[in-house]
Image (cartoon, rainbow, N blue to C red):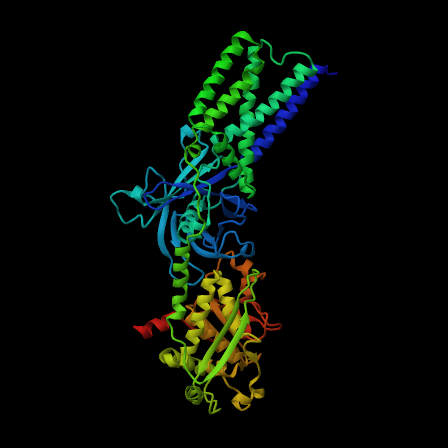
Length: 617
């Protein structure tokens, strides 16, 4: 049987092992991120964390921002694709609103690319500080950091283009603090963070809307004074327990016990520092309150007087009194000293405005230029369109647009329609191709479609919509009830024709059409929004739709909310397109009509931006 002292030692050992296990769990590896303009001083903006051991998220060191600033996932080519948060970071309604901005390769090269199928552009790379012109994804460890930190820099530009001073290209610094025992990803954590840092600096929300914590988030100095306060409270409770209840001195003349009890200050310091870091990670930071405490108790030149008095008190206690209060005096003096040398405490209070009204006004004026610069079409007849965004992300946007029509232009458009004579002499694909070619060659036929595309782009930019919501807003325009679905044989406006595909102007004026007409209208709107389109038609199913080319990536399935992209994608000339329904209301991108499969569409007419570029040349 254990005696009392052995039981006490056993209990202390259990508590110590439990605390050590907790500390190891809490001090898991973290990848800290600093950014700046090229050649400028770096400042900490956030850190990288792993989500479900697969996806990486970049969180900002800001207690007010709850959603990740960037998300990173590996694509089928083993590139780390970076998605940047769109819109206001503090808007809880935009939690899933992200835009693909680029990726980093296994060579450490960072490319810019969006959801559109555009050529990637090299914008930067990651490299070690000792070799700034040699891209790499592996950070460097050093003996003086006990091989616990891996450091990697982020540089702007092309490493193959020589410059006089490569360090002037540096726009970011990454530090992976700690050692991980898990299998590393194909592209290292520090490289993930480097790509997120560069792409966020270029495409993230404006700095005026973000207050990032500028001191190192894992630093010690700003928690020293708080630790002294907590330590003093605990120490005084222990002291009065011994002196008032047990009627015995706490330490007496045991000088060795002074070191043990004073050492407890550092253990408490480590715990409070870790609590601060964990709170920042959970978006529950008490950093403003901590800064206020440090600034409020910092007395400037009087701090040195206070520390001097602490030193005198320690000498007096050591020579003329029991050693009981030595740890307390030491903790107070140490906390005040550490707080006094903190850079943040030396700076005066400043009031920072989160919004630059003049800049915001300039941005708003710039946003409306694409729409305002295009004169609205003229005519004596008016049609009004009213629709709402059906967003998978819960984002709301209302569209309202009036367009004027000229009866002469409308009549000429209908007379030139190859289906007007109802002499169906060629395959449908030939007629659709002919209509597309006419509209591309004749801007008058697409004046109103271009005006609608410009309006949609402007509204989406102003509302700060993401890529998928912008496409959905255009798709909602052609769906019911904005443009009514009606079969050709039931449509009075086309004299109950057996087969008729309207030009977009005809569909807009009639405000009705079957799947052929609505798909033609949607194809042209999205085409003039800058996307490559495929017009799909099925004789077997008597149905038409469109497909839009988007860059496939791991996040696309979460937007579209489908089990497999293969079920809704069509390959045309080695380009991948995603299905879009244009008929009834409530069809989001990628949603098929019941009993229709993507392989049912035997007619596939591709409309690419290159055709418009060739015409302009």
